[in-house]
Length: 182
Image (cartoon, rainbow, N blue to C red; front, side, top):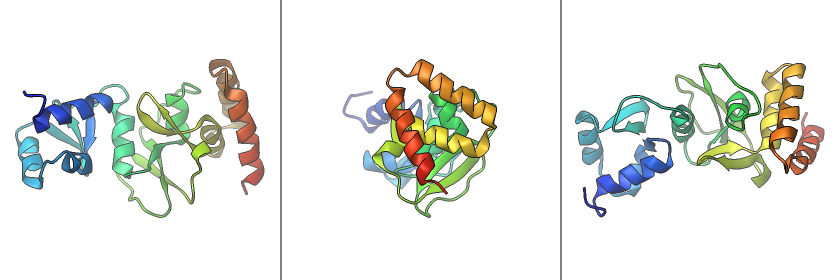
């Protein structure tokens, strides 16, 4: 495979995204609908969600399930709630569904994805961890408050303080978010 071939570009993108790519990204790399469908039929791309594929093999390994769910949410989507807490290593999750937050009213519900909406996310609401767009620590803890017990939330806050030396700033932002929330 030549470094100038479209398949090389797809492989590089997949390597940065835990082995998954979105159809819109493949189009941006210059692949037409026929070329994408040919790769699906040939077993080079395996459908995970509508418009999202795992490259080269049919299994989602490691964090690929989270990345695939974020890609399925569309541009600007982020991992959130219990899934984000697990990615930030604040609290493990055994949930079968992946939590994804989208901006505004867009986004469709998909099997395996718990879709959440946020009107206008700020820069403090967003982060990036191991290449996965995710809610920031403060926003993650705020979202976690919706779905976790008080005890689980307290443990997650303690873990944020222990694991993240700079979390004091994040926890101050959390206090601000909590005051602003209904």
